[in-house]
Amino acid sequence: MPGGWRFDHDPRGAFLGMDFGPEPVEMSAFAEMHKHLSTSPDSGFVQVTTVQRRDATGADVLRGLVLTRVGNREDRLTVETSDDYFALLADVFGLTLDDVAPAERAALWDRLVAAHEVWRKENGS
Image 1: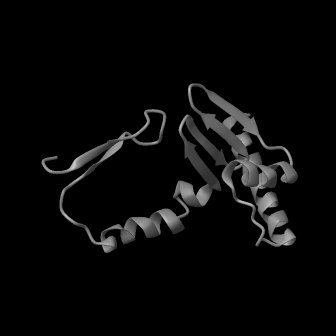
Image 2: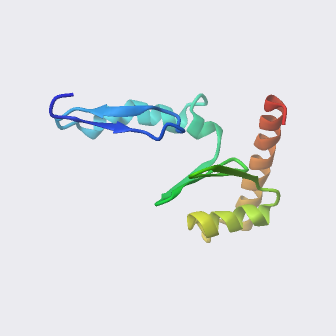
């Protein structure tokens, strides 16, 4: 695009890339898609709890109870206990959730386990 630029995404990612034009754009141009991605039951951001972190050698992606380390190779780990899940959030992603009450943590864990079981059945795991 003349005067713009292209972002080529990691080929292992969910999209190929994005093109950006040179003209300024108001934030309101993104409002409709933001609302869809944040609230629609069809959105992957609504369907699966996801935490991601990129560093110089790759990325850590926690989707539901599955942690994937993407780098020179791909490693996967399924989180088995709530203690492990919350320790992983703190240690890998820096999310201590100190402001989340124990009952809310337990409710989150229960939702994650239920969603993981549905995912396992749907994927034959």
